[in-house]
Amino acid sequence: MNLINLKNLITNRKQNKMMTYPAIDFKYHQGPYEPDWFDSCDPYHYSITSGTSPFNEWYGFNNDEDVHKLAHSFTSQTFIDDFVFLEDQNAWYYSNDKTLADARAMLEAESRF
Image 1 (tube, rainbow, N blue to C red):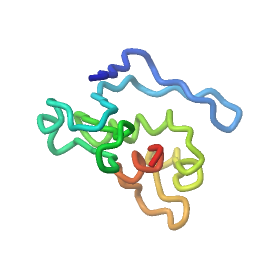
Image 2: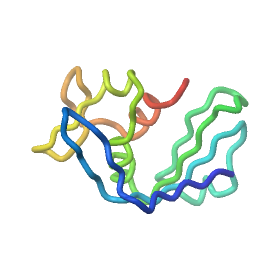
Image 3: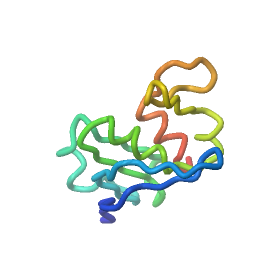
C-alpha cells in the first residue's frame, strides 16, 4: 500500500505566478485490488479502475474539499482542458459550461485511464 500524506504545502506554477495551497492529508493506493482502508473513508473515497489493472487508483479523503485542493497539483492535458479554477469563486468548474466540478470527474481526468 502506498500512503501519501502531504505534510508540505502544494506549490504549482500557473499563469506565470507561483500559487501555494494548504497541505492535504489523504490516502492513495495504486494496484489491482481495493486496499483495506478504502471503505473506512466512506463517503469520501473514489476508485478509478479498469478491471484488475495494476494502474487502478484508490483515493480516500477527509472531505471533498480536499479533492479540490489536490486538483491544484494535477497536470494531465485532459484535466487542463476540462477544468478551470475561478479564484473569485475559490472553486473548480467545468471549462465547457462553468458548472461546479465534480470530485470524481477531476480524479478521473488526472488518471491514466
